[in-house]
Image (tube, rainbow, N blue to C red; front, side):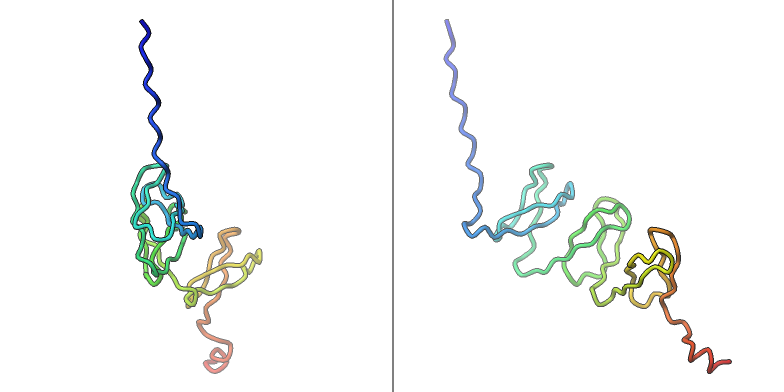
Length: 145
C-alpha cells in the first residue's frame, strides 16, 4: 500500500528591507566577509559562517584599514588609535587622514603613504628606501658648518 507523501514545509519568508532600500555594511566577526544589512538592524547573521555580528549604534562613524599581518580588511570605530586583527592578532596602528603623508618612491616613483613625521619610507614594490623626514635642513647644515 503506498504511503502518502507529506507536503514540503514552506520555507520561512526572508526579511525584506525597508522600501527605501537604505543599507549599510560591516565585516563579519567570524569569517571577515563583508555583510550588507538594512539600516535599523541591531545584529547581522552571516550566511556563510552563521556568526552573529553586532551592529554599532546609529551615528557611529566607521573606518577601514587593511591588516599589516594578514591583509584582512578590518573595520573599526573612527577615532580608535589601534585595531587588533581577529584573524592574526596583529595590533595595527589606526591613523587619521591628517596623520598620513604621501611621497613618490625615489626609485620607481610609486606613490607611497607613510606616517607623518617618519624620516624614511620603504617602497613595497622595489624595496627602495626614500628619505622623507627633515633631520637637518640645508639651512641648518650651512649654519652648523
